[in-house]
Length: 122
Image (tube, rainbow, N blue to C red):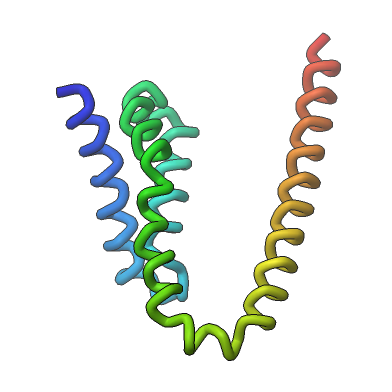
């Protein structure tokens, strides 16, 4: 029953993300709204990590299964994708490097700030 409750919380947040997508006229996927909402709920303590931990871990563990449909789509539409393969590879490489660089810089900033905050407390 615990897993049903946890999964229900995750699904409720996902549904609210879907509703927000239709209420807010921005080109943002509903999954992003749901992720941001879940983050806010977790940070504010409205939803505790223990309230969704096991179901969240399960969903992360089965995530590779979710990419099977994408892989099949690539195989099915290979002729159409072949014509734009070079731009796709370049865009994928550049965006991956950019995300890694920004994530690294943000992490370094947070670590420095946390160390500074800890040293100020002492």
